[in-house]
Amino acid sequence: MSKFFPNGVNSATDDIALVQKALRRHPNANLAISLAGLTVVDVDGKAGKQAVEGLDLTKTVKVFTGRGYHLYYRDECSGGTFKGDEIDVLTGANRMAMVPPSIHPTGKRYRYSMRSPARMAPSPKNLSKLRTERAHQKQEGLQSGSTDLVIKRGGRNDFFFRTACFLRRRFDDEKAVEAMLEGLNDVFTETPLSPGELRSVIQSSGNYVEDTAALFGPPKTTEPLPMEFLYYPYIPYFGVTLLAGNPGMGKSLLVTKLIAAVTAGDRWPLTEERAPKGKVLMLSAEDNWQRVTLLRLLENDADIGQIRVMTRFKILSPENLEAMARYIEQERPKLVFIDTLTAYMGSGRDMNRQNEVGEFLGRLTEIAEDAGCAVLAIGHLNKQSAEHPLYRIVGSIGFAASIRSALFYGTDPTDRSRFALAHVKANASELGRTMIFERFGGGRDGTPVLHPIEFSDANEAEVCRVETNAVGRPASATDAAREFILELLSDQPVRWEKVESAVTSRSLASVGTLNALRAEMAKSEEIEQVGKGKSTRWKLGKPRTDK
Image 1 (cartoon, helix red, strand yellow):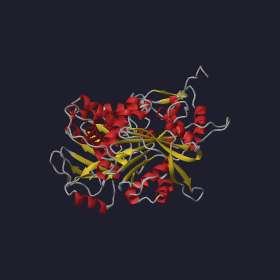
Image 2: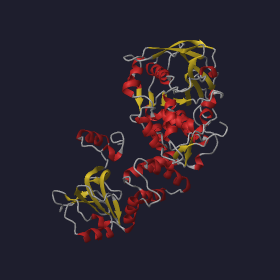
Image 3: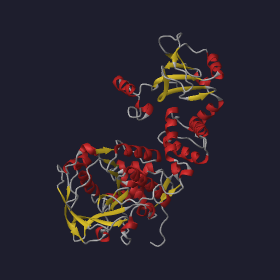
Image 4: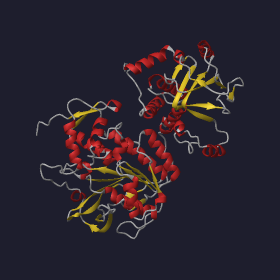
């Protein structure tokens, strides 16, 4: 059913043909409707019935459920969704209600009351009297801001997923975990998740948290397997390859050439060996699909029918990471491309902490191993010219430690108008030779492409050498964004969203570039993080006494 309605109540539709198609595929499925423009009073027990009867509500459409009944009203309740004593008032587009002829968990079938009027009555003005004292306190707390915990829209799924994982590790009781999360959802959520949405999050956490007894034991097999490669020796299967370089060098131009080779089964650069033809899943926070990426793929003769994309940008939270794992298992792509890695980690993970980076990359590696695919991710380098390029990767050293292969993209040290790809880390093979590319096309009406020219003896340090620039003018858009951030921030911590809004509104940098720049500036102590998680703020770093 999730194929037809992937986002629960947010996929509600009045497309009868789609509904009929879904029911032909799932004839025993229950039915539910969105409560956009509607209010349902869900009465479950004796106390709820007494409360409703005490209000002397106008007669309206009535549906018997497994434990009580639903009363349907036109218009949405002005007080929003809330709980009473053995009673729920549900309203709004993010809520749904089961309708006949669905079957209740008790085994009873939903059915209309024969005494119901033909039309729904308007939503009563006195429904707020059904609130319990606890619900009143919740509403007052949310309005006054006196509540310590308020779960806002936009962060609900991630909060409940992480909390469910935490509780599962400590309680071996599914019902207890569900009851605790229902309590949090009802009392502390600004706009509570629907019961179906909450159950979906809880089920997803069950896929992520393993039984601790299953974590240890003898190996499942003692038969060794050879390492396999998508592109030998540069990009292995069953792991993560990082392609890093200085910002603005055109790494995505190189990647679109590699992706096109996979989709069409074309030759790899500077070899007669052909890429294994197959699907490619692309996650790109940097470039617009229709105006940039699609044109580049077509220019490289890609088979667009083999391309799969993340249809809108979402960070790879634990829940979204598992959704991607399920999609990869279903589609079986040869290659998964992530641009950039730091953008998809999101602000909820600290990219400067090795344990958080290692956990994220470890799960990506597991996904690649389970599906037998390769993961190619884009990263940026900082401008610390004295360091080895592996230590210049923006973020924790965990990035360099957790990957199977590392590729560095920069300029040809003998001709800075050309570009070079150096292979600097290989866990399962010898290092590949450095390749030289030239860029052709582009301009106002053209699409730039890279053409491989020759092999080179240049090493990664020469390829990724930091160029010095004249003093007084920003060397790049990244430097302009850096200067603006330093002017914007002060000693008073602010949310990063404020910085992001100010930078992007001035077209100084994309969100992905900005996330990478934040990590670089934090590492150099130009800016400082205050707090963690949803309470994270940023301020200017402390002045360096040695400068």
